[in-house]
Length: 251
Ligand SMILES: Nc1ncnc2c1ncn2[C@@H]1O[C@H](COP(=O)(O)OP(=O)(O)OP(=O)(O)O)[C@@H](O)[C@H]1O
Image 1 (cartoon, rainbow, N blue to C red):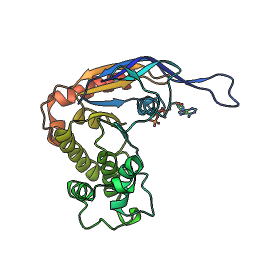
Image 2: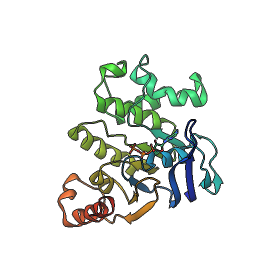
Image 3: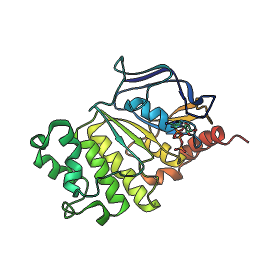
Image 4: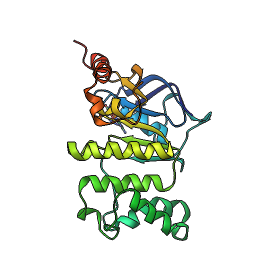
């Protein structure tokens, strides 16, 4: 379980007399296996929030905890997927996928059969020896997700992972992520700008206010799973979307 207790994060930058408060007084509890979408205006501190759970940043006030223990650094049970796939350009698809595992347990710790299995799960067969520049954006992101999943993280922190993809690829990747989640059930924190994506994927949508970001709304999405894209046409879906947009863009 992830808990944020009255978390505030301020950045102190050289040349700025006043600290920049990115998020303030955020309290959240995220249960194991839950899929939580986070939406909010640009600059409201979504990435900051994710970075604190990842252990890249420490809160200025309050606490971010995992199973009751304060998060102080990154850990193997938490994997991060960024908007840009951030693959190593000189490595092949297989090597990129194995990279996280290699960092964790050395070259001899890489389980080749697991890499092969992951290549198959991700639909990357035939591209094992390709380098990132030889792949489409969607395939690159699949390699990045594969790398994150190789260490079997309990928690997947995704920062607009599909933001740079075209609509068709994005929709495929959403389906693909839900399929993966259904099997392994990691806890997912998913940052997105897209309200439709947030509702389609999440068990919950956390809506943040403009900076300094606070939790403006925490909405449970009671739509049945598996969720297909045509769900977006339903009245219930539209209603969720309308409620979130009313908070994001008050008239
Ligand atoms: N390392 C840093 N040092 C100083 N200020 C920072 C740092 N990281 C983020 N900020 C500031 O904190 C605020 C929140 O940034 P953050 O990236 O968390 O927002 P966001 O909601 O993810 O934005 P976007 O949706 O545009 O990606 C912004 O004003 C940003 O300039």
